Amino acid sequence: MIRVTGVQPDSIGDQLGLRVGTELLSVDGRELEDFLDWEFLTAEERFLLYVRQPDGEEIEYDIERPLHEALGVSLEPPRIRRCANRCDFCFVDGLPDGLRDVLYIRDDDYRLSFRYGNFATLTNLKPKDVARIIEFRLSPLYVSVHATDPVVRRYLLRNPTAPEILPQLRHFADHGIEFHTQVVMSPGVNDGDVLRETLADLYAFGSAVIGCSVVPVGLTEFSKHHLVREPTAEECRAALELIDDRAAISRAERGAHWAYGADELYLRAGVELPPAEIYGGFEQVENGVGAVRWLQRQIEAGADELQGWEGRRIGVVTGTAMSRLMPMVLEPLAVHTGARFELIPVVNTLFGASVTTAGLLPGAALQQALAGRHELDLALLPGESVNDSGLFMDDMSFEVLAAAVPMELRLSRDFTDALQLPVPA
Ligand code: SF4
Image (cartoon, rainbow, N blue to C red; front, side, top):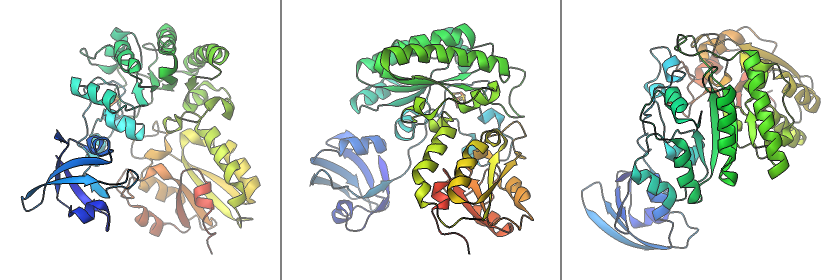
């Protein structure tokens, strides 16, 4: 059963009499469990919908509608699938106490992998889930592989019953499902020969595995440092060599780079980032893979729209990780806009200095960094640093922060989104 949370006026759902609180029970006799059932089972031109209205009345609708016409109902969010693993590097373990409850949820959900590109391990799939992935063709999926060796993978996931990933991927691949894959690299565990073997095993799937990224493990002050550590520069360089070896094979055989290091891996290795061309469609940019090159591309593409900023002073707030790469983005931005950009790296006062990601910065640290900066006309904040309700990690709202600092604030994902808006008076 799925509950309706909103109905668009004049939509088919509205005309049928569906309303907030209506329970969608089945389509063509098949019970509805979540948004996937709803989307896939109502994709036909004609179907039977069985519902229970808030007053308890049960109704069956025989629906026939043009295929392109949406039903116009919003659904309650699905209950998140909890993770069955206990990775030593799990970010949830690295959180301090006292944050929003939702931040402590370890999700590992193939549905969110398909819909939003969240990485899933596939260790908590039931036979019914496997059948759904195949039936609904949930492809591509984003899969955290970490290691193809089952012993190493179970160790990394701290899950002795994790199913072997290669047969799992093979079964799905045989049914036409494709994957973006990642390896979170934990030094001394899944780097070196294990990484080489993992890349080779995944590459052997052919087109079913679209690509594999390698991300260095990131820890906070609260992580299990007695069990896991971050890689050294030398270990990151060694990983990049393995990635380059695999990418060279792939370029020669398939004409695509296929194996990628996260920007963070290059940063830690002290190695220059590769050119934008290697990242294809930037499919793993949300995973920090090719993020700098993607930003540069966005700026080039939107340059003509960035007018009226000549001589303005703009602060660019970021985490300490990106601050070393950001000059590569701000230089072309200054050329295109004529504005003066000042990078403002902010240390994460909530999670500790070792958490360097811009998206995890708390509002209090941003306020401290921007207080008294009257000379700035505008400050750009990382768009991903607030949730859908506009709250930073420490529950400070964007509005509260904006009222507490002397310049206009804008959230931005690629600079062009914020700088295409009118210039502040
Ligand atoms: S798979 Fe590992 S890192 Fe991801 S949520 Fe589960 S325990 Fe945490």
